[in-house]
Each structure stands twice: as structure tokens, then as C-alpha cells.
Length: 82
Image 1 (cartoon, rainbow, N blue to C red):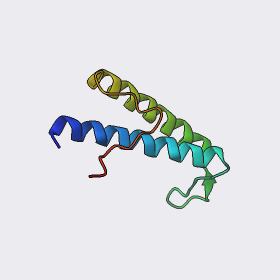
Image 2: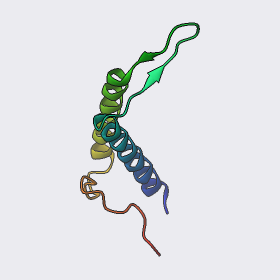
Image 3: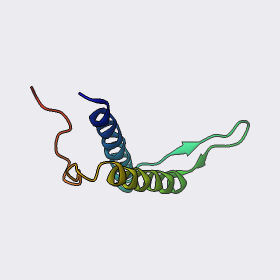
């Protein structure tokens, strides 16, 4: 696989992972954080918003860098099975 295609696969994998994480949160998942010496706190909404922004930015980057490649919105396989 050439460098260009490797980078495309990397970006697409990160997009898919971020989407799945957002789906997990939307289906009732929660994220907790405990800053040093502080009590635990629910940071689900903050994390989900940050992840959505990251996914949107990666999608913009992918469209800009790889306009010639098919859209991945239907989640086709990234690799050949051969």
C-alpha cells in the first residue's frame, strides 16, 4: 500500500472509531474523570462534543486531501480481503 492510501485508511479508521464512540455515548454510555485530588465527575457531554468536533474536522481533512476517493459514509471495508 502506498503512503497516500495508508494515510487515507488511517484518517478513515479514526473517523469510524470516533463515530462508534459517539454512538456508545448516545446509547447511554458515560465517561467519568477524576482530576488529581478531586472527586469523580461525569464528563460525558464534554467528551462527546469534543469527539464530534474531532470527527467533523477529520471528515473535512479527508474530503480536502482525498476528493478522488469514494465517500466512506456507508462504511465499506477499508482493506481488500485478499
